[in-house]
Length: 349
View 1 (cartoon, rainbow, N blue to C red):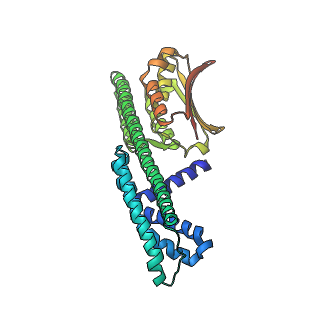
View 2 (spheres, rainbow, N blue to C red):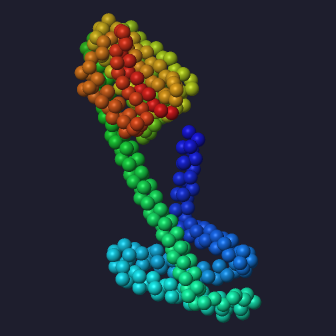
């Protein structure tokens, strides 16, 4: 977890610099100035080296920008190499004569004398320095472009995943609402007071869920609250035939999970538990963290039907939402253990 935090921090610094164009360029040239100042300080002395390199950068900077922002993309990248190299020759020539003019004519006026070197040696040095700075600037430019592209791609994938999660979330609400209205309809013919009470509880439940309508992830304690309200609704329908128990680890309550991820499993547990045993069903919900995995277990008495695992809308929805949200960092399975059906979600934390 410390590595992830450091990674996010470094990404934040890079993003900060990329969004501040002027600051980014100032820092780049400041590093170049410091490098050449230190490099030449053994020959010229620190103060003289700083002054000389600052003066030389006055022409090197525009030359480098012309190379990486004009010659490189407009000619080299389009295979117009003859024009590219011709432009480079012109820029090298300007850099050479500027450096020699500064070195042997202007600097002596500032009481900074410099030993006169052969033209070829000065030219080679100027070409080497300009080429090195242009190459370094180009590397950073390409890195920036690749980073921006990767960042945009990451954001696109994130938005796509969120859109898919929201779409799957919207599939749950009509499914649950349909089943609840069917239950109310069944009560209306033999117990209108109970049907009215269930309708009131359903309204409260829907009002409660609307609080988290736009949220993809919520603390687990919110999910438990939603399940408790759902049990209140189903308890009206089934009475003493429905029994439920919670065993919640307090340390899990603040861990964020997908909103409405447990309700389809609880609904499935009640529905198929009653189907396999009309006399009643017991539902047991447990949360815990085991070896770095948040483990959510929904157990119900009854028999497991394989067709319901593969074809049920609620189960299919849960699988797809988990895959979208926790790709590679979750486990989900339903199995029979003695007289209990276990639905288990594990999420890496």
